[in-house]
Image 1 (cartoon, rainbow, N blue to C red):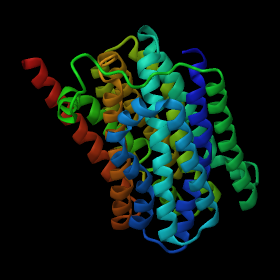
Image 2 (image 1 turned 60 degrees about the vertical axis):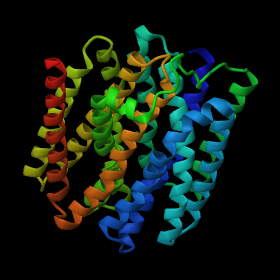
Image 3 (image 1 turned 120 degrees about the vertical axis):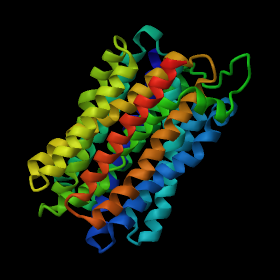
Image 4 (image 1 turned 30 degrees about the vertical axis):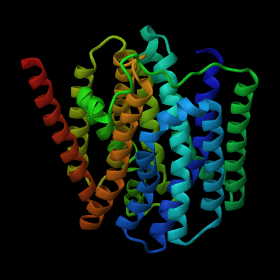
Amino acid sequence: MGWAWLYPLALCTSVVAFSVLIPRVAVQLSQAGHSGVEVGFFSMITFLVVFLSTPVMPRLYRRFGINLVYCLGLVFDLLAVLGFTSLQRYNLLCLTAVLSGVGACCLWGATETLIASHAPAERLGTITGLYQTMLGGVLAIGPFLPGLLNLSNLQVRWFVLVSLGVAFLLVFTAMSLKVKADLGHIAPGGQASWRQIISAMPVLLLAAFVGGVFEAGISNVGSVQTASFGVSQDRAVFFAGAIAFGSLAMQWPIGILADRMSYQKLLRISLLILALSSALAWVGWQSLTLWWASALIWGGVGGALYTLAMISVGHQFRGNNTARYASASIAAYTLGCIAGPFMTGAAFDLDPRRGVTALLFTVALAAFVLLEIRLRLSHSK
């Protein structure tokens, strides 16, 4: 991919800002008296905007190109950072989350399509895993930085603004080098409809959805539940960091395995691990140590599900409307991210100790059953 790596690097540096800010805002809202459902709603807004915007992104990639799309996304990110660091009212913070969703959609979809389209096929799993490891590393370290560096609120604001400045610099560098990164190829058969896309990859969409629930959909409500153990705000947001560290540890290994094993077998194993870990967390609900360990597993295996989906898109649909198939996987993942905060917020309100783990067990087990049914039907044809 060469200098095209500047684009994934720009995405990762921009994500630093939101991995620092959003868990802190979620905990602050909870401590201000907002319910778990309200915190969950705030957490899902960014993903809802990504989900709604995803269908139109392939058209924008073809018309405007990667550089303009990236710059537009970073401008929205900048506005969102200023809002998150300046505003206190719940409704204004929700509006700010809308801005962050638009920025995320521009950067995220372009980066995933770039990798699926341009990485060498024989190393697609490894390269995708490396990219996801980079992104996971950013998400992992972000929630820890204010506490570890003892940053004041003003220092946090400047820190995240600098991270966005670096992202702008990387994109401008790619523009000056005239990096070629076409995102708009359409196969000779024409542009696939969304119905055709869904019917062509139901298993991959299911994997992406469950990955969204476990990797991103539980981070903020999980941080709120961690605070109920009696830990400080800075330690409570470590739950989001544990989710991200788990994802960081798994992405490259799962990418390497995906170059050597079938994705169906890897999906089965992943869903069983998620169901078992959720059941153990439900049984040991009083153990903070088990809660931290479960977060690592959920982040790692949940992230692996999404990575497997994107690797499979690159293998099965390269050169055949890749941007639309990649966008469909992102839409399924973000749907999980949307459903996750709402469902876990409601579960937390119903049972602050065991509600979240019971819900996660149900999701993982149901997904495993649906996967088995779909694969058996496919084999019987």
